[in-house]
Amino acid sequence: MRRFTGDRLLIATHNAGKLQEIAALLKPFGISCVSAGELGLPEPEETETTFVGNARIKAHAAAKASGLPALADDSGIEVDGLGGAPGVHTADWAEGPGGRDFVRAMTRTWEELEAAKAPYPRTARFRCTLVLAWPDGHDEVFEGKAEGQVVWPMRGARGHGYDPMFQPEGYSMTYGEMDPDLKNSISHRADAFGRLVALFEE
Image: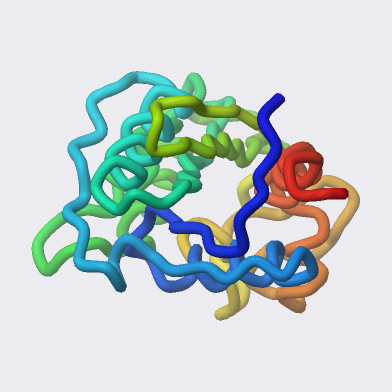
C-alpha cells in the first residue's frame, strides 16, 4: 500500500456538502483539501457500472488535470426492494428539469417501493468507494457501507442526498435528523475512511 506523504489533497467533487464532510474527516491529519469545483476542473463522464469504476474515472481525471493526488468518492444507496437500485445511478435519479433534486429522487424511490409492494422493513444500505489516485497513475481503493432501511415520510433537514429517508441500523433517527458529528462517525463514508486513514498515519 502506498503511503500519502503530502499535506494537500484534491477532492474530486463539485458537491460542497461532500467536500465539507471529507475535509472534516481529514482535518486531524493536517491535510488541507481543495475541490475540483474550486479549481474549475470539468466533471468527467461516469461511464462505469460499479462504484469503484466511477470513482477511478473521477480520481484519475482530477489527478492528471491538477498534478495533485486526488481522492474521489463514488457512493449511493442500494434499496433491496428495488433489486439494489438506484445504486450507481443514485445521483441520476435526482436529475430532471431545473437540475439535481434529491426530494424528487427520494419520492421516486418510495413510489417504486409502493408499486412493488415491497415488504417492511424496507432494507437498504449506503455504499461508499474511495479511490486515491496519484498523478503517476497509481491508485488505492477503499470500500465502506452502512446498513439500514428507507423510511417515509422524509425526516430531518440535515445532511444531503438521501439522508432524510435513510435510517441506519440501531438508530431511530434518519441521517437527516442526526447531528453531523454522529452521522460522520457511523456513515458508509466513515467506514471507508476508517480503511483509508492507514495511508495517512505515521
